[in-house]
Length: 305
Image (tube, rainbow, N blue to C red; front, side, top):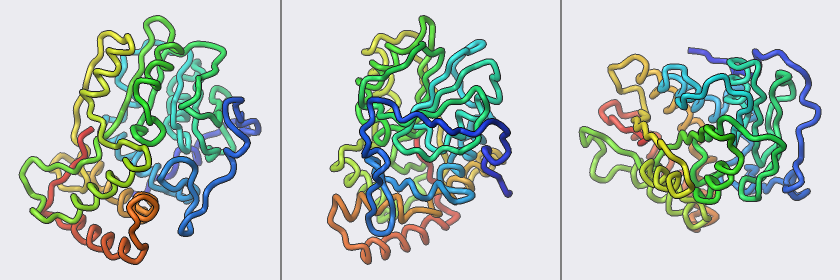
């Protein structure tokens, strides 16, 4: 089904003052160009988000189906201030701002790739999560989605800053996935190319300082160590393809599949060529095999979420 990026449907004011916060160096706008793609300090390109329906948007809508259209699960009542870290194109922040028009929603990211028109209750800041956070007021909710190992490199540091910037009774919610393909019916072949690709990509990312395999139970422990109480874990299975009999999960799987295969090359380049020393030509051969296996209907793979 055709899905338009949310910001294309949103009315608001020009976002003329995306704030370049004091903790970020001037080099924040100097993207690295490598193998024809542009990067910030993340090892996933930030150029594809400029397309009409990029990987981030597809993954966003896939998770919306997974979550029954919920934006978050924390029992926050009448939030006044919400922080979206690693906001990317700002889709989540914009939607939550529509749902809670009385709330002020702040989205932060290293890359200034947010839309130019935003509602009056949305503010985007170019900021680095790894530096001390500077906010004038505390938040009712701090939210992250698919940031583990990318925007969030140190969970203890991130949660310490989140705790400090929350109001009493506020919530932090981490909607994160574990980068290890799994299947409940052992449908991945013993020599699975997808699993080989995921393991190699993880290895390359890890060498670059990104741990994409932090489990929900590990994050729970980090939260408790930071001082959070009443920590709740909701474990889900994010289908990698439309194999489920459940219509909601089947649609989520279709969107996830399109999202991954639409820019598998970009998501793999830095990990394989920069950190593992692969030649681009060899990587392209591997990715063709990965795509071929991803189309197999007998494989019921998912990402732990």
